[in-house]
Amino acid sequence: MSDQAASIFQHIQENFGANASYVEGLYNRFKSDPNLVDESWRSYFANLNFDGNGSEPASSPSGAAPTKAAAPEPAPAPERRESPVREDVEAKAIFGASKVIVDNMEQSLSV
Image 1: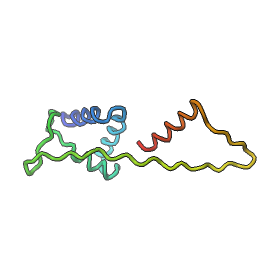
Image 2: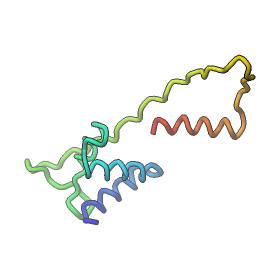
Image 3: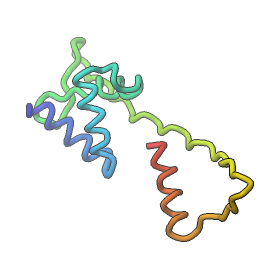
Image 4: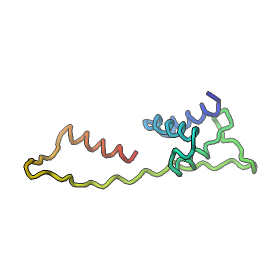
């Protein structure tokens, strides 16, 4: 791995915490084909330009340091939709640990 790639992965680890492996996957997709990631991520990754030691961004051709784009804003939470229930089935509310799991799964859709 090049020094620049190591610097970028370190930057991702420091800035994205528990989501770093997801962002690293996006970065790898970006490196293979920028069109494989959303426009906001393309802009973000294009502006991650380290000089190799990981401490400072490299200078742009004009001599000024490139501006770093902020991480893309998270997508809004999906709308909750009522699921149709057949007439011969009794619907029961989810509660307890099952409810927590469902809530966490729905939140993960916006990651």
